Length: 195
Image (cartoon, rainbow, N blue to C red; front, side, top):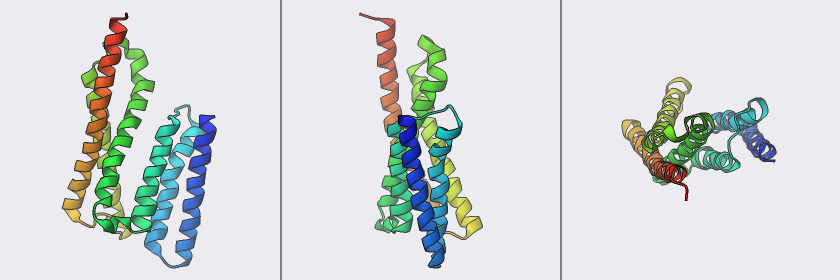
């Protein structure tokens, strides 16, 4: 059921962005059209994972990811909410948390089952936090590349914008990393000392 909902929600977002891409292209709004094309690509990621791989993410993670895309691509870039000043930092903080939850999901599917009691809560914290930081860095590379090669202005504030975004990403990631480390410590304690 979750797989079908992932396909439905991701497919709806891809179709929505495709309609916007065509609409803005026909109205000579090249920036908005390019953002919508980026939305098609980003929205297709969970769709492709659901259709062609065995790696499945929980529905709340996928829905959170799609909400983030709406906040960043549609509301932020297409509707101009980034002009509010605080919206960009808010979206990056939230994305750090979402990326951390994605890191937790990957960790639980790929590592925890094999590690058992040998895993460290500090490792979970570090893995989750690093995953969020990497996601933030990759996003900034994407913005920089769009500015350099496509003539866009995603990094409107230059170095200050980039560093503020990275601090917000790692801040959101840090909150979830602390949560995941504490949660792992409690789980391991219960597993080692069952009552």
